[in-house]
Image (cartoon, rainbow, N blue to C red; front, side, top):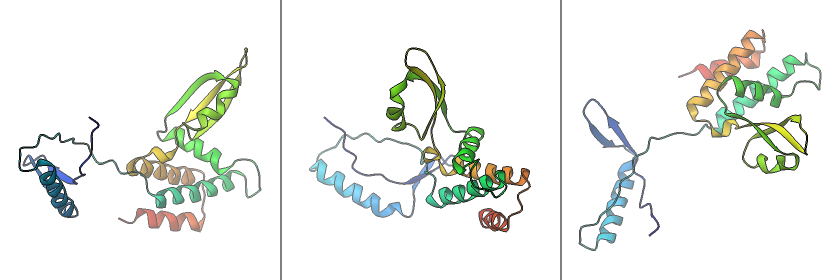
Length: 181
């Protein structure tokens, strides 16, 4: 029989007391789950399995927007204000490698790069080999990051901009907004 999720109940575990507590927003969901269980039980004991998994919040769109704004400033600084040269995507790859993105180097048939683009954020040709094969560098993008991983990436971008000596008032404004609790 296929498993059916009846509901997801947000709880907090307190290791000091060994107790679980339903979060405020979860009280409504808790009532709904109990109602659904009562419907399924038909007055008889109902055997169920509870699955416990940690909350893993995905990065926010605000974090993503800030990251790309900072990477654009970084690329502009590398290029000395001229067009061409280093792109924000180049900076993105550099920062991803430094701050934890998963990178795989794969040897594949030369025509298989498009297939990999469905699985990885970035696929770059590293080397053309014999027998119609090539080596590619495949990078998972920040879309797979949690909010904490994205925070670490953005903090790293701010650090790099400071190391580069970027004194853009926009970066200062972004930093002040980012640093607010």
